[in-house]
Length: 472
Image 1 (cartoon, rainbow, N blue to C red):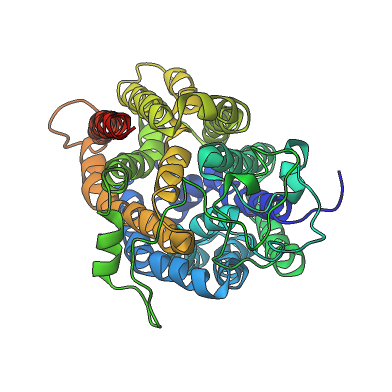
Image 2: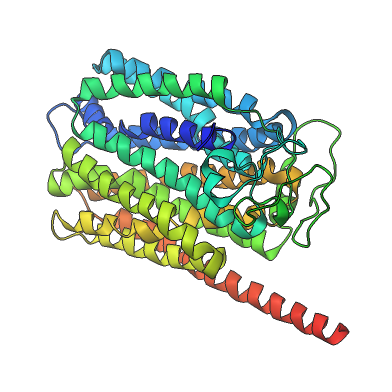
C-alpha cells in the first residue's frame, strides 16, 4: 500500500494510545475497591473518590483543552500532542509497580494531573489533524490520491465527507478499545498495567518519530478531498469552494482566545449553538452513566473484572463495527444531522436499558445499542467543523471538548452522591439504577434538541432555496 503518511500514522498512534488507556478500565474498579474497601462489593468512599477524580479532571480539562486546541492552530498538532501522550504514561507506570493502598493514592493523584492534560486534548487534536495536514499541501510532486489510499496517504478531508472521516477515526479508537479490553480479559491485573505502560511508551515514541507535523492551514476545496476525488491533487493556490466557511473570529495578533471569543464562535450559527447544547446534555448523561455503571453492576449483579471486560468488549465491538463500516456508508447518504438523531435515539435506549436491568444478561444486550450511539460524537464534530473557518478548527474542536469537560465536572457532582445513596442501605426506595435513569433523561433532552435543530436547519435551507429560485 505504500509508505504511511498523514492519517495512516495518526491512526496507528490513536490505536496505541486507546489500547493503553482502555485496557486498564476493567481492572481499575476492583483495584480501587481492594485498596479502599477490601473484601466488600459496595463502597461509597470508592464511588466518591471516582467522582471527585472525574470532577477535578473535567475542571482542569475545561480550561486546558481550548487553549491547547488554539495553540495547535498556531504551532502545529504534533508539538501540542506530545505533552498529553507522554504524561499519560505516569499513572499506568505507578500501578504497574504495585497496587497497594499507598501506590493507589499515588496513582490517584497522578491520574488527576494526567487527566487534566489528556482528557479531551488528544482527541480534539487528532480530529483537527484529520482536517489540517499542511506539510504536503502545495507540493508539486505530491502523489495523486485515490479512495483506496485514504488510510495511508490522505492529508485533509472535504466538508461533505467529514462525518465519515471522523467516524473512521473514532472506529480506529474503538479498535484500540476492543483490543485493549480483550487483552485485559485474559491477563492478570498486575500484567495488565505493565502491558498498558509499555504500549503507552510505544505510543509516545511513535508520535515523536513517525507522525508528520501539521499546522492550521488546509484545503477546504472538495477537489482536495481524497474521499471524494480519485484523480485530482491539491495545490496551495486552489480557490475556495462554495462550501468554504469564512472565519467567525477576528484575526488575533497574539495571545490566547478569551471566553468571549469562544462564546462568539459557538453562538455564530444555529448549527454551532445546537451542537454545543447537544454536546453538553449528551456528555452529562454519558459521564453520569460512566460514574455509576460499574459500581451499580458490581452491587446489583456482583460483576468483577471479567464481567466488566465482557461488557466493554460488546460495547467496543459494536462501536468499532458502527464507525468503521456502517457510518462511512450512511454518512454521505443521510448526512450527519440524521445520523445524530439516530445516534441519540440509540443512546437513550442504551442508557435506559441499563437502569432497569432485571437480569445479569440485560446489560450485555444494552451494550449492543452502542452500534447506534457511536454516531453521536463524530456527527457533532463534523457539524462543528463545517461551520468554522480552516484556521479555527483547533479552537472549535477544543471548545467542544471543553463543553464535554464541563459536563464531566457536573456529572460526578450530580451522579456520585445519587449513585452512592441508591446503592447504600439507606436508599429512599429500592431502585439501584435510579442515577442511571436520570442520566438517560439527559440523553433524551439532547435528542429533543437535535430534532429542533434539524427542523430549524431544514427551514433555513428551504427559505434560502426559495430566495435563490426567486432571484433566478
